[in-house]
Length: 423
Picture 1: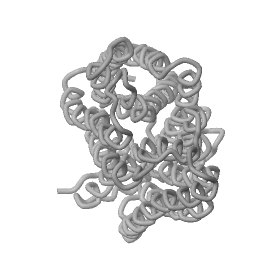
Picture 2: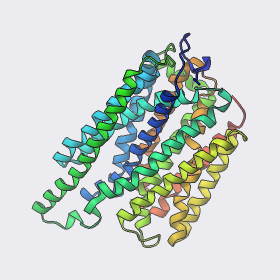
Picture 3: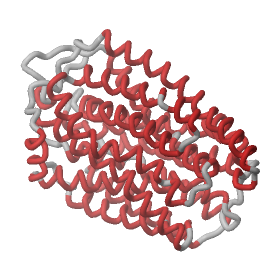
Picture 4: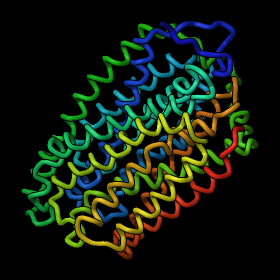
């Protein structure tokens, strides 16, 4: 059995069949970039401890990563409109591998800014990958079920975000949870920082090797699909698409969603380590992040079925309200209730990204790659909102800072309600 990219995907006049192997490989990309993105939740407490950073400074890790979406997404959409989905995927994977290799000199230098540069390049590659892979999966079949199909692919993205953090916590956090670098003498601190930073470098070398192998797979099949080519590659033309209310609202909603999701994920280790919550060690709290992302994975498999029966916009609004209630419960409660309530927000997050994304590109036709670029640009919310959340946490408390993501979910609920009818 083969799957064809239909006319609404924005493909050229030629329709080329995609094998099951190729479709499965594209889905595997969701697993890879999900896992790599979730490793940031491990890097935040690691770098915070290594460089004795405040919450606001630690969130610069996410700022550097997600700013790449803002800068690279629109050019990536124009690039994919010219070269096609699969060649764009190869470009993204190669860029990701380069970013991973940059962690080696960053680890050797022991300079925080060098880690931020490596994260930016890694994220630039993931951005190119997302701009190509999200609309490709959404358009590989019946437009009426694009929400469900993208949600199912995103379930594998969540599988990556579930599996990577526990492994990353064991490999990357290491002895940082047992030693406070600020208490060491200058000479001892320098040696400690070099050793702990080296752990990060070694982990990302292994990831770079895997990315290179996957890039080779897609390079050998780069001409298998011509979908994604043929649309206008003008940057000004891409921004002109924001005149479409559904797409513009989707861009705003995606900005808020990614920001809220990343803000919560980034503070989970420190949040769960608080005495008023669960009082866990940083390493144990790092493994608990798997529950946050695991909830999103389970929810996406369930959501793929629900979105075939109920209007996507209504489902989106419902889970957003659920997220707000769970955040309020966590902020007001203590102990295990506070901890598991905030972890359960992951379940509410499950269908948000794919549903917002597919609602946004609905009806774009050959302009789909450009619309995808605009939506991926909105992922910069992961840079802005966590930084704001960190500033509130420094000024008040982590519990008070939860008001920021809660507000984001309320606004997304409004978008879901407004988009309850087909475009």
